[in-house]
Image (tube, rainbow, N blue to C red):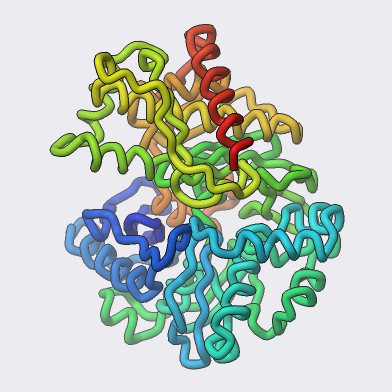
Length: 494
């Protein structure tokens, strides 16, 4: 059996086709080649068109099929990973009523803060494991308050992966994991949160049918199958947010195991079997892909919005004509600490780990006679690594103390400079794997269709590429402490 994985990223859509028997990726394709736009009608807002995701997903599937290395008719199950926390709203005809308000949009921060106080901080944290914050429920409340006519035409609300699954199957479903990332789930009662629905006055009918992550979420319709060269009736058997999916693809399923990624955003994601929460909701706890009534598996998530986004910005601004590989090489030519140049990398909306403050990006200590663009490239990557350390120290307060972190050798982890800064700043070694979100989604589909006897069996051929140990902690620590003091000074000014 072949498995199709679709990864709905902020920058592009990637698909992979995997042989369930060997777990080998037969083909991958991405669309578009250049990064997709984020629509920002006002400062702090971020939107994308759901129909754009669908068109790009179809284009990526056609590109993969065009490789000719597999028969598309042999695909037996589909899995979907997606950018988390986005809000999609559709009418009874399954047409989107507006652009999706995506993960890095900041417009609903104050709405969530008011809900946190009204519901009760202790009650919110103990039951939702989070403040309503800037999550999907609060984004829906913004639509209700600011676009009431549109709101009353909503039939169902969805996350981005639910929308693409709907386009394939015309069925609308969700999961406990998805609802928890939207802060709609009461973990004490193991049901939809009456507190959230009552406070925001949301109709329960807006919530789609709730299915397990690994289960059938509808089957591909005949006209869609004809358009994509697939066979009708293929089940969608897995849907997950990109960070739980990244953890799954790294076989991070058991309590104490930890994954990281450094793409458009940066994330550390640890698995726990306890209903833990951060009192300030700076890190967030959601249901992991293998969460169940009998087996509590929670994902404790630290998210930094400004990681790959600032790396892209510095390339576009100071690295004209350079590839990321060129940038990494230049960054590596500069000594540890970037000769005193420090970068606060938070310029992509409100940062949850900084209490939802919009801090912005700051360059400190620029010496016009000393610092070159190579220094800027290194200082950006060190600043990102220091942001990870700052966030990991918050996670440690909640009892998450990783002895090792697994990550895919991709995005910023392709940079030796960043990877060494990460392990030395955090004091934690990193295992690097050849992993990919769309491959993880394909293997998730295999678990859902029972092509494997267990979740672990899906990753028996996963190969560790490299282990990077911290060997220069004493050289990075003074730079980190200086960076931390600059950040805290900035936080006190906001």
